[in-house]
Amino acid sequence: MEIIKKFSKQKWLIKLIMDMDKEDRGNMLAGYKKRKRYYTSNLPDFEVNLKNLAKCALCPDMCGFDAPCLLISKNTTLSPQNKSRLALFMGMERIPMDNPSAISVLYSCMNCDACKHWCPMDISTGELMVEMRGELEKRDLIPEKLHHLKNRIDDNGSVFEKAPYTEESEFNIDMPNSEVFYYIGCVSATERKSMVRANIALLNHLKVKFTTKFGDRNCCGSPLYKVGYKSVAKDLAQKNKDIINASKTKIVLTDCPACMNMLKSTYSDWGVKIKPKILHFKDFILDKIEKGELKPDKPVDKVITYHDPCIFARGLGETEISREVFAKIPGLEVKEAYLHGEETRCCGYGGGYHVTNKELSIKEGLIRLDQLRKHSPDYIVSTCPTCELSFLEAQKNSKNDKYTDKIKDLSEIVAESLGLNF
Ligand code: SF4
Ligand code: SF4
Image 1 (tube, helix red, strand yellow):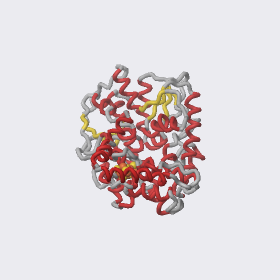
Image 2 (cartoon, helix red, strand yellow):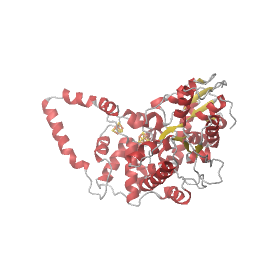
Image 3 (cartoon, rainbow, N blue to C red):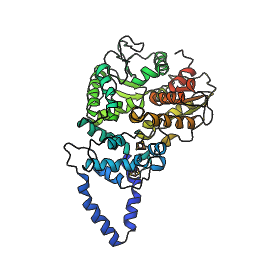
Image 4 (cartoon, protein in one colour):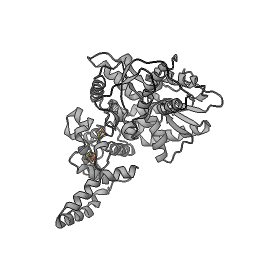
């Protein structure tokens, strides 16, 4: 499926070549053959995809019209194409890897994949920037303002100053013979406690035996990996795999798209195999509703607007499950945002952007929040604790209606329709 999608995006290139006259085609192919010298680097241990960097660097910024990194900064140096161009020059040693201005450009990206969505060559500049940041880690060049993230992992296994995973936490639950490992995200346990309580209420309502293993587990590693600490994230992957696989549960449930993507895809790319099935709560809830095990029958007479998290909508190409859940709740009306589904816009917190580019991150959060409240919904709903946190933070800087109590997770809406206390 992925290959067909990729190929169909490149049909235009074949047509272009076929439409050329013989001489032009010959010149183009001769140039194409010579390109290979641009795809290698003399830098020791340099692993970034130089071929994709070169392709992107030569592109006339075809995704720029919808790239939030460019739209909010209004600085063309930060466009996807220019980021790739600069990274290519770093990889080819024309710009030193330790150049501070160049390094700051590598971090001017939210890893939202808006570029990939529109890219005719299916390139994600965001992924290329993550690879480049990994090169910085190898050379001990990760900017100082990010060091605290790694230090906190060393201190307490999370990216937060105060450890969320403690024996004393209200979320430390370990039922005998658990069937489900509720892998609570760092952001959820720290900043979105009402969502975690709703999820626990849902599991209790279903009489599911579950564990959270707060005494042992760690952050999934996503925030570390995205800012360049790939080796630290790989260590976390090993530790989490050992804990999850030893738990003998059949399902790992996550409340965070980033956790889900790490446990399911990124760990697997690194050869770290989590044995149980991995599901996000929205998938689990829809499955239980369809099987008749969950019956959300109390009307929720509210208008909502749903914010699609980038990881689900563009990363995994999944936009319908949440909407199918909403359709099962009596009284609930969904009014779509101007940009929704695969065209969703980043909340501003992706890729550590709120740490590396705080002001722009808040600006992006406000822009998205304004799009989401266009229809004056009773609730703005998402399925990502980080997006929800971003909107809560943006709200503090907003002059418009206060939405602080109106930002909800899908689980909270479902729990409301089940009449659960949480
Ligand atoms: S991501 Fe694709 S469309 Fe955007 S600048 Fe790079 S090559 Fe061009
Ligand atoms: S991933 Fe998003 S923020 Fe990063 S370059 Fe692409 S469009 Fe810009």
